[in-house]
Structures are given as structure tokens and as C-alpha cells.
Image 1 (cartoon, rainbow, N blue to C red):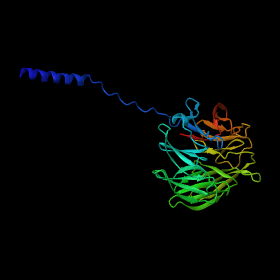
Image 2: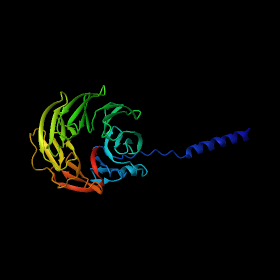
Image 3: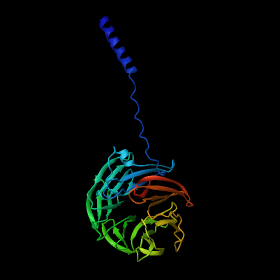
Image 4: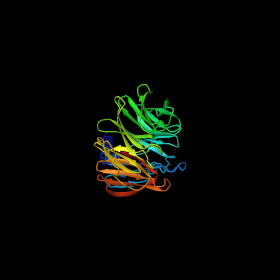
Length: 344
């Protein structure tokens, strides 16, 4: 009995010692924060048509630095596709509209890695979230706006528009869609997915933005027979509040945006122009004169004005950062055909 008791005691002691010496499981490392919200911008490098060299650049406001080929670096050197038109961030997801690849690519904003895609669409342009589970995508060739279920990442329908559609803004239950060939902004009822009205604006209606009064401004690029113009309307009743002649232009990317206070309008018309939302005319003197006919992207953030230059749309373009007075701070090389600038 003593021998049995001694052996049992020995086994218990060994068990205690083994448990005490067992190394603790190391804590899982916290996921590194990839981006600093409020200090980040993405540059959509469209690439050259049919070359498959579209890419995303990541700009860090704090470091004043740019990281090119950011998509491929986060996705095991995978190619993004052919001609990324736009990018829309919704919560922890980013929707990249890849025009000539006829798809919308979905990325996680936690690691910027692909999580899904939605296709096909003939020539998608811009993505707009409508509800938690519904989004619209405009199109260049289909003459329809595609309806998407963002919970299932499937195409569920289309809204006939009979023309090319561009950018969208949402105000209440209305969705406003610019239509360059019709010189109009169409109004869609987001509850019924049907066109309810249209607003005649100017030739080449393109980019849009809200001001501090929640009025919508549209930049109309004009044509050889019509000047460019800025049109401001009230989205509550669709009434036009003012139309401002922006003069002739040899080139315009159609970009328009506001500052943080939303009391000033910035737009590209050969150079970069600025006006107060209370002004009745555009100054003949550019806010920023670059002397280039290929200014392509524009965004204003805090004390900075960001402009992309696509140059000849074949070689790599650049991103220029100006201060709020229009003085150049820095120019950085971007990708091929850098266009839309997306703040995060």
C-alpha cells in the first residue's frame, strides 16, 4: 500500500509541475491599423485603356508620402483589371468600379484585400450606396443604372435612363444622376427605383457636390459652341438657384468639390478655379495656374488642395499638394492616368 500511495503521490506531483511549467499561450498580436482615418487619400490611377495597368496609390497626409501599386502589394501582386474609374468607401468596405473589366471589386478597408466582386456590367462608372443592402452603379454604354444587392453582391435589376450616366448624389429619398449627353440631372425615387423628374442644367453635366446649405452644384463642361457653367439647385424642390458662366475651356476633367466648410467651390477648367458659394461669377484669374491641359483629379482637405496631373495618359502622372493659399508644397509621382482622389 505504501508503494502504491508513493507512486500516486509522485504522479500527482509530476502533473502539478508539468502544469506549472507549461508556457502560457502568447497573446494574439493586435491587427496593425493600416490607415489613419482622416489622414488618408487614395489616388485612382486609371491606367491606359486595354493595357490592364490600372492601380491604386495611397497618400499619407501626416508623412506627405505616397505608396504606389498599393492594390497589388496588398493582394499578392494580383492585377486590379483594366481602367478603374472610381472608388467608394462604405463603412469597412471599398467598392472599386473597374470600367473596362466590367466589374465592381470589393475590398476590406482593414487590410485592403479583395473580398468579392460583382459583374458583369457593360461599362460601369460610379457606385452609390442607397440603403444598407442596395446600391446603384452608373454606366457609359448600357443606358441603364444597375441595381445591386450589397448583402449578396448580386445584380438585381436596372433603371432605364436612355443615356450615359455619371456621378450620383443622395438627398433624402432622391438620387440625383448627372447625364452629360442630355445636359440634365435625372432624379430617381430610391424607394421605387424609378425616374421621377429631370433638371435641365448645362452642356456636359458631369461632376456634382453639396454645399453647406445642402444645395447641389453641377459642373457642366460645355462644348465648342457652349461655355462651361456651374449650376446650383435645391434638391428639395429641384429648382435652379443660380447658373454661373464659367467661360470657354480647351479641356476639363469635370471635377468639382468643396472645402471642409462647404462654403467654397473648386473645379478644374484647364487650371483650378475657386469661388464662394455666394459669388455670382467666376474670377478670370485661376486659383492655381498649372499651365497643363491634363489636370485630372481634384480634392480639398483641411488646409490642402490635392491635384492630379495625367500628363499624356501613357506615362506616369503625379500628385501635387498645395496649401490653402494655392502655394505648391510638394509633387509626388503617382501611377498612369491618376484621376479621382478619394478621402478616407
